[in-house]
Image 1 (cartoon, rainbow, N blue to C red):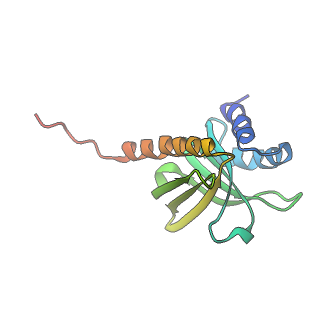
Image 2 (cartoon, rainbow, N blue to C red):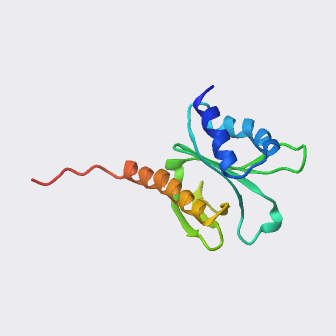
Image 3 (cartoon, rainbow, N blue to C red):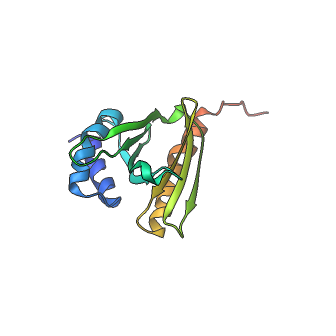
Amino acid sequence: MDLFGRTFLPAAIDAGLTMPAVLRHLDPVRRYLGGNDAVLLVSRCTRPRRWWSGGYLLALSRHRLVVLRRGPLRRAPRLHLEAAIPDLHDVRWAPEPGESRVLLAATAAGVRQKLLVRARSARAVWQLDAALGYVFHSADEAAAPVRPVPR
């Protein structure tokens, strides 16, 4: 079993996905993340002020962010957003522990994307916050130019 296979299932179970939902999303997420990337976070999400647009599934690895729109029963999920972490700009998130969610916003290919990432509890909100901080703060540090230390 590859790294993706070992990490996707535990992350999906932590997110509270049912086994049919896990199986429905497994192949599309694998296609976009690849088999050699560990899945750090899987979560259900929606678009703010567009709750009628249906549910989404977010999968985050160290190198990529994938958001799939969940299709109706027996229909495959459709891709909403797929981007490499360095290609995402102006990434911001705001934990809302009282609401058990995190508001995530990022610009990908010139389009501003906003998602309400759901958490199962207030404790899970802080785990989401830690995972987002791990991925996006590390990406910012890697993109920062190296300056020589003054003598």
